[in-house]
Length: 361
Length: 49
Ligand SMILES: [Fe+2]
Ligand SMILES: [Fe+2]
Image 1 (cartoon, rainbow over the protein chains, first blue to last red):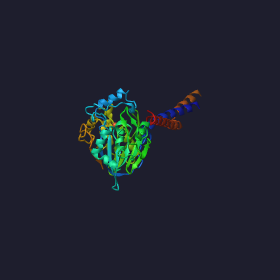
Image 2: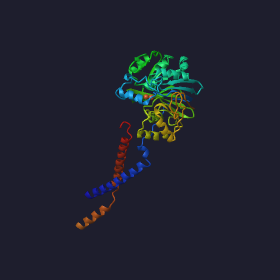
Image 3: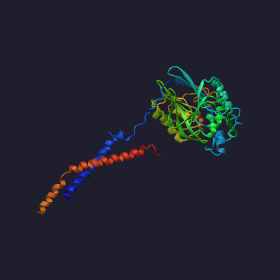
Image 4: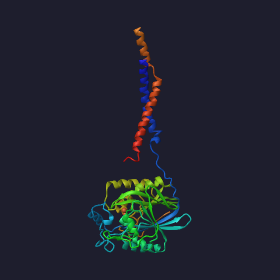
């Protein structure tokens, strides 16, 4: 009896070793898919549109980089509430009438499958004097007066993207406004007509239209072929939450249109891939990519530049907080960065500047 | 008598034990499977940092 048990154990040991090694072989070859999770494929159908045209109303958020950084430092650092920072608004040589504040705003013309069209405004800039001039240059003021712009999509609460809201409200206070979840009370108050004298921001034309706050972690349809995605990003100067747009263009693929993209361009593209039907083909990008906004360079940005080509983007429109350094490196990496014309205080032709247009589809 | 016993012991030693081998095969492969499942679960966890 003792002997046969020993034999059994010998067989067990041999079988165990064989089985263990065999399983190692099988699981690393034919069975490997069982262990590697399947990439998520988007299943939210946002529909389709024919084309979009983006007009860069203003991408120059401020005119002197060092000044805006110093304003934040002097107020106590990057996490200080933007509404209590005394932003420099006089004596800046390259500023607009001495004011360092500019703004970010893009006009989007959408053509639907049935040939009808709609306009939306992505962000409304910062300095209302500057925005008034920019709106006039692109005819946005008249469009607002005539109620031709269907909605104002605010990507995030940052000064340079949102504080120019008075320039919109003075022409069309009834406009539909969409903001991301995370907006602070000050932000809603500004919309309703508040004044923040320390930060030199006010709105004398209270909003009377529909206001929508978009939850994070979801794809929100806006029009056929147009949707937004919100992110719970924590951003400098105590801002919370950012949203961006995704368009599904017939025969081309997805186009990602951003404000600042503080959530990171890779995060946004991944989210489109994993949530939006057809999002695995990213055809184009437009907007701020937030890589080197202050024109400094960190080796980790190189990894970003290396990661972007994997998405097979065919048309790369970018500007604002993308940074000129990043644009140079993206061109070197073979990315199809669309050049601008460096007009109306945009500094270089490296990417789309103020007054430049880009069409997708 | 004692010689016979020694002989039979020798004979039994060389005999291959199939039931033991089969049980070992199942336990051994199962063990590897569980290990790699655990590792992949930890590796691809979406909640872990
Ligand atoms: Fe920005
Ligand atoms: Fe921003």
